[in-house]
Length: 319
Image (cartoon, rainbow, N blue to C red; front, side):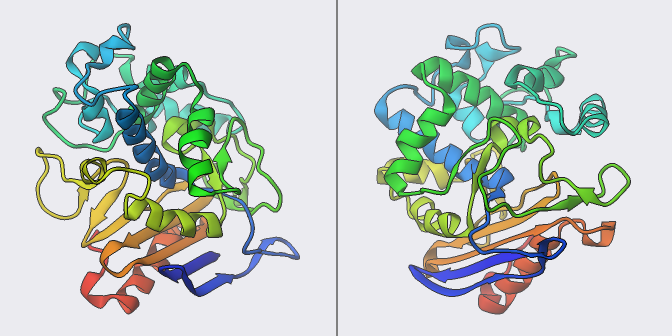
């Protein structure tokens, strides 16, 4: 396990527990695949491009993706809030079989989108529901590259990593990771095995980033206070979509739960939990390997919720 708790810039606790590999202790400066925490970077990137005038939230995505199913009914803003109605490819049975059959297979963005639209049907009419769909992050990635003429790797570096001073965060084009690496394990194929270097490209634009605990802890208040955005853009980033109600709710690439900005990725052996509480400038981040059995399917999130309940019992995680 790797974990850190910060109050503003003050490090309250950072710990590395257990072995990353047999006889190799986990290290605090290890690089981890951050999975869905990538989406907090993604949302800020989208809004920075809106501010720069490369895209507009009200634009139909058919302007850049005319070949895509229902693109004339979906706007950029709908994709930002998972309102587009595209089916989530990660629950497609054929996709799941393909990943398990060969965890070293590389997936392109078009491969991913194809699983979602293969039957020519949307999940719901665009704009009528807020429902998490990994597909829509990859659709947005394809759109942003066409709109700007730049790769997502270059956009992240130019508009997020460099201005935020994140020197140990980057995009994964393949299964490689910078050293030192936090090794993880998975039972997805029926045996508990090292899954660190399974190909991560099946996550598309919903989970393409790697980072370290220190970089993620640095990013949390930058994102959570909107430091790279105008006040209006930041408000758009965190607001609740009009078609959803109550708490928690899905904002632009993250969950707002009882005041916390959260994500809880779980893929290829990496289990993570990330939270930032703006009213107290409090950051909690936990990453672990997945456990051997279903009772420990997402240990990082269980640990995270326990930490939060102790630190802020009035702001416990409610999902």
